[in-house]
Image (cartoon, rainbow, N blue to C red; front, side, top):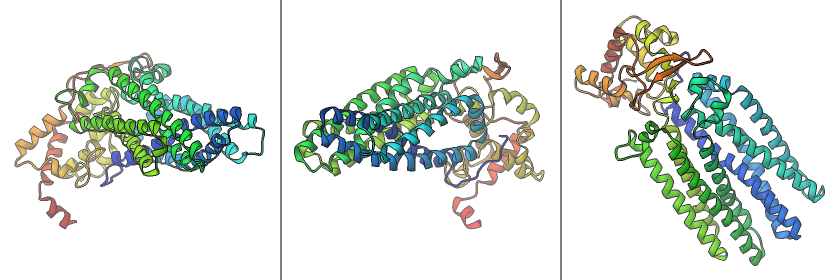
Amino acid sequence: MDYPIWDLSLGGGVLIALVAVTHVWVSHFAVGGGLAIAIVETLGVRRNDPALRNLARRSSQILILVSTVFGAISGVGIWVTIGLVQPAATSSLIHNFVWGWAAEWGFFILEVATALLYYATWDKVRPRTHLLLIWLYFFAAYMSLVIIQGIISFMLTPGKWVETGSFWDAIFNPTYFPGLVMRTGICLLLAGAYMVFAALREPDGAARAGLVRMMAAFQITGGIVAYGGYRFWEAALPEPVRAVFLGASPLVAALASARGRALWSLAAFMLIAVFAFLLPRAQRWPIALAGLLAAFSFFGAEERVREGARKPFVIRDFMFSNGILISEIKDLNERGVLSKARWAARESDGTPVSMGRAVYRAQCQACHTVDGYLSMRKLVAAPDADTLGLILEVLHGQGEGYTSGQNTQGGHVATQKLDYPAMPPLVGTAQEIEALKAYLLSLQIPVKEAANAR
């Protein structure tokens, strides 16, 4: 609300999802792969087994390329995209977790340094020193996950933080430990799913079967832990959040479908992993690729559910997806939404349609484009103004049911929370709401005509 909206036909949320999901597919392997390589090389040294050490060597190359190259670049990409698409929420997370971020960046530097040293010192240092590097790498990588999990889960379930403003209440929120269990399992299953390709490159047939079976064991163990963590996570969610994607009539049907896709993908992954464990000699790279894609599908769909379950908030019970705070609703209804979104107010020339476009930019464009993703033109293709007014009332409401108080840190929080629709409440003066209606009515020309007009 305080910052201009980045107008993308793709939709800002979709862009964040594309960058973030590809990042977690590799970043969680960076954690689980560190543990798997450490275990494999430790066993190789103790047993004097060259096949195990060669598996660790080949996997370390994958780890370097995936973790310190693509993982680091896509991690920066997340910061860029969230800063452009959700600047207010990004600012809030930085201010609330500044020391948490500082610690995470410290661990990340250690992670990158030890990964590079580990890869560069094969056969150049003593085995004990080499093992120390990979175990230190895993420690740093897992500690990064431990911290980031607190920040990610906070956005969905801030818990007592809305009352206390405490850093520790924010980090150790109601879904912190369930999410950490689930992500630990995902790290393990991705480790096995990635490293099985390195195992298949072992030239000795008997040794190759043993390595494939070991990677399948990582996959099965990770899948069981991830499934248990996911169920634990669902049980820890507040009832209004579960209602978004669970039950006979979920508020967002697309999220319910994503949940089903996640669980079926995990089931398919487990079948492939069990096949590899029981018949390791029959494992081939197309089957291994199918397992990796199933793992990606499970994790991607789970992330879709977790992110979507925040609707209509970006930080639940604190900030809506358009940047409006719960504490601001009463004030914005009195003074007007454009009194805060001054960047949008400057675009208005005083006519109802231009004022309405400014209100739309401030309140709606964080999620809706005009003709692209979640097209507003298609949404309001109603026959008359009365029907359009009903759409506004049903979809957005007027912020009723929310009242504001102060927490112990002097910040405003919601003191009353009712069930809500999937969109933020429409706020502003009666003049602004009528102007928004006028602007939306102006969009009711045929979509093809609008495209030709441009």
